[in-house]
Amino acid sequence: MPTEQQITGAFGGAQPYGRTTMKTPALNLPASRKTTLALGALVSALALSGCVNYSGIKTDKSIAQPQQFETSQSIPAEGGKWPTLDWAGQFGDPQLPKLIDEALEGNPTIAQAQARIAKASSYVQSSKSDLYPKVNASYSWTRELYSENALFPPPYGGNWYSENNALVSASWDLDLWGKNRQRLAQAVSQQRVAEADMQQARIALAASVARAYNQLAQLYALRDIASNEISNRKTIGTITNGRVAAGLDTNVERQTATGNIATSQANLTQIDGQIETVRYQLAALLGKGPDRGLQIAQPVLHPTANVALPDNLPADLVARRPDIVAARWQVEAAMHGVKSTKGEFYPDVNLAAGFGFDAFGWGKFLNFTSRQANIGPAIHLPIFDAGALRAQLKGNYADFDLDVANYNQTLIGAFQDVATQVSSIRSADKQLVDALRALDASTNAYQLAVTRYRAGLSEQLQVLNADQNRLAAEQAVVNLKMQRRDEQMALIKSLGGGFDAQSSGLVAPTDMSDDAKGPNGAPWIGTKVPAPTATAVSATSD
Image (cartoon, rainbow, N blue to C red; front, side):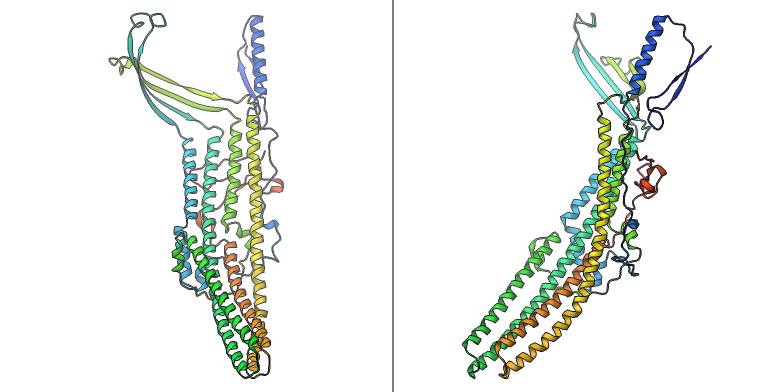
């Protein structure tokens, strides 16, 4: 009668080797033989019980959700629109969009980002190849003198013979546990990271060009003020000369007026040097030599419009900023790395086969009787590795925790960036109202002081003080206007600069399985990779 023997796997539950039942016929063996078999079974059971496993290795980290941050006061919904990729046109200077396009085409930063994408794409192709069988062919020709006193007796021993060997072999890793598919998904995620990084580089470059161009416009506006100031100082000098001739002023006032004119001319020269420096900076951003900057025409930027933030900004920002999208895909890549390493704990099954010909000499090399063939499976099971696999998995989880923290920090930084720019713009708008009032008052005071000085009713010091106050007020208005435009450009960058993950094909996975969620149902990470080359594989959180 047959007997039933139960062999319980060493892992149980969700671990790699579950409970297995095997039926074998009863054997009539000597006692010594039965003892040997019992010892063998015991050794096998102990070996299985010592197989490496990932019990106890897990993480409790999860990515932050926009809704958990309070932003309603600092980033209010105002019914505005998201920036578009042609946002530079709103500033009314046709030269600015052309400069941005030139920079995106010629700046080495973009070429570097494109190279990183190409490298990531090569990893995808390499990982994809692991899913398919591999076929190889080999041929060897050996001329050998066989020993008379070894394996082959005469007439082979003691003579030279040629051996021809040709073999076509094939192998296929069945990837029963999805390890290779997870590596492919990880490579696809890394490619998405590189693509999002390139979009971030493009947005940062466009914003840098625009803000440098605005700085150039600011310097030209300050130059106009400095040029007008020279004229005003010369006017004061002319009045002073007349007063000296009339005996109302002394040579002290004349020399003071002459020195003020020279000081104003020095300020104008300083601004010209700053303009040239910014031109060189723009040329570098365009990816060109310094002479290209000298060919840029004087900016003619229009006044900026009011800023209205889009509705539902916190939730939508995660798909509008490429740095957040890149961080999200990096988390996805790390989780696929965890899943791939978990597959290392399970047995690998490879199928291998080969066929060819092997013969001495050429006469019978391709004869049917010279054929050689092999076929069979190969199974690899980690039993003891001194903790290497567990250490590797811990490292993968550490990478995951780090990438989750980086994502959360990027999200927090994005909210802070938007709130800061909005606050700065609001502050500049309020300051500009007061600055315009101050400019109007100081201009009137200066005109009255000049009139009184010309009529001999006041001293030179009074008109110089009034002129200095008017000059400072005029510079403050220009600086506030340019600062406000710079902050608006920075806000456009903070809102993603027209990037949209949906239209760029970089939407991060959002579908979640129950065992791929963190505490309280918070998402760990998406379990789908939206790419035709990757296969979705569910993950566990421990």
